[in-house]
Amino acid sequence: MIEGKNSDLELASLLKKESIPALKRLYNMYYRSLYYFGCKLTGNNAEAEDIVAESYIKLWDRRHNFETLSQIKAFLFIVTKNACLNYIKSSARHTSIYGLVSEAIICDEEELFLQEVEMEVLQQLYNEIEALPTKAKEIFKLIFFEGKPTFEIAEQLHISKKTVLNQKLRAIHLLQTALLKRGILLFSCVSFLSN
Image (tube, rainbow, N blue to C red; front, side, top):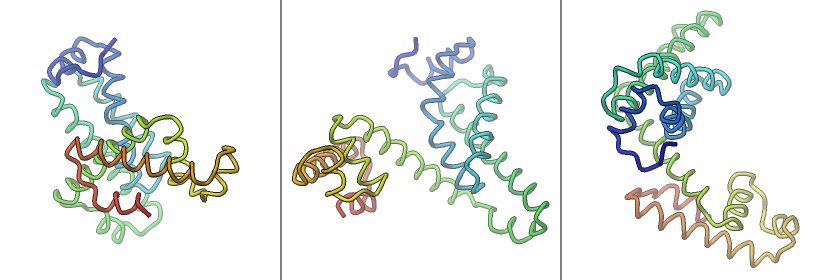
């Protein structure tokens, strides 16, 4: 079984040796970011899911070509980006607005880099949310993912509104602390969480 603390070289080496657990580890590491990236480019969640799955198949087919984790990551993002652009071009041809769409989707390198950074930050945020204590995580998700008001959560969970607010503040504090420890400064996210 692959542990979460394998070095970059070990993971690349294990992949070369046709390790399915290594592939699963890479899938867990990058799937959400690639999926989010694909959704953002294509505007089609199902297509993005298919594209990312194909990217991992291509990675497996070329597993002997990679020496480091950064090469693997770059490969996955480039393959996903190219497949998304091909999908958009194909879709645009079918809708006869190819000229307008192709101008809108051509991303310069800086924009792609910023999107990749955004996806990595969102992945880190998601990981930290999943690591929250059970009650704080449950309340955080109900508030920020489902948009439920405090009184409704209190009724649903059979707890007081004050407990809901305390758990919300606890979750926010734990997230801020964890992300700061990782060196991630999320000014916009922190202001969102505080509202």
